[in-house]
Image (cartoon, rainbow, N blue to C red):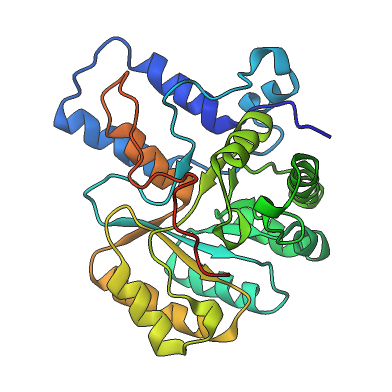
Length: 294
């Protein structure tokens, strides 16, 4: 079934624009406060959220992205030492809880791109993610390569995965990461126009799926980190989980702050004058080089 709603990310953009229309010139101190608020903004789109309730009225929702709209990200344009750590392919029954313990001990919030059928199998882990302040996003139902699927098959992959999150935690995602990084403009537009999903790629990849070893995963993430980075790893490999404490501690010691993807995107939006269309830091489109398998 085709989803007939647009999500909170769109409405946040509309609200931010209307709230700032009285002045296009932000003072530095005002901008700093806006960006602090962006980091502090909650992420989960729970179905009892007042804005989320408007999803059920498709007549009020745009069905195509406005001209020049940015609906795909692999990093954001900021200067602060703030990054988003993301994990794909979970939840894993034992490794993901271990990771959540690591995050909780450091008060770090991350974004999990989950496989729908795994979310259905382990709904308690999804509920824990949300309860502890993490963001949960769609990674399809079966880890399907979307560029090899028909539009109807893509819709099924996304909808089944989303339905699993609704069943597990009364939660609808508003971000998508295509498995294997396999994406093109047509699919990206479909996911945005029919599901309201922004496409999230990455700028730092330790290639932990190749099992290079704990120290290599740690060093690749630490050395690759940069302001506005969206960092990738997988919470289904034991060496990855083993690498996380040292990676987090080293980047924290370097002055980095970890936020969810949505909070990172809000920081970039808060940095732009009202009415300016944000240009992609790294465009996610047909011309992207094909990432290695994840």
